[in-house]
Amino acid sequence: MIQKEQILARFEKVYASTNDNSQYQCLCPGHDDKTASLGIKFDGDKVVFNCFGGCDTGDVIQAAGLSWSDIMPDSLDNDYKPNKRFNPFAVLKAIRDDVLFMYLCANELKQNKPLQESDQQKLLSLRVKLRGIYDDIK
Image (cartoon, rainbow, N blue to C red):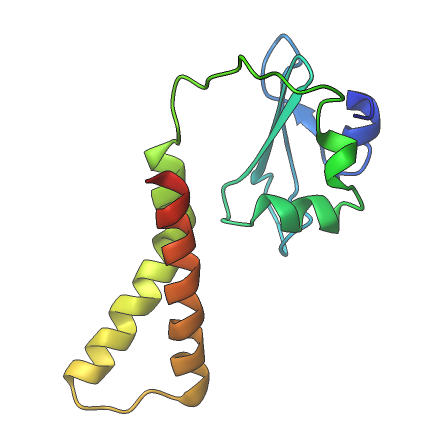
């Protein structure tokens, strides 16, 4: 794992969100970010990325020019057991736009209006995305 300062240098508009400099906010490189929607938490040799815009951690890491080996601990901690498996609020926040899109499509179909091909394709990809989120948290 590379040093915290090297990781933070890959992001723009970084600021500490806690007094102990363990948590930071910055612009997310995974999407066209105007506000600091990416949270980065350092806990010993662990790093947690959370994009409140819904970006996948792998996409954020890649967009920042990092690799998994850059952010993963050098040794495995087999005794680590998180006290929560997931944050339900973060999950809901991540899928809110997707759910709104699905609602709007359902409303169009209810009115017997056909969906555009691009909307049909987006619905199919959302099905895969939401199924993946479900599988990750069950």
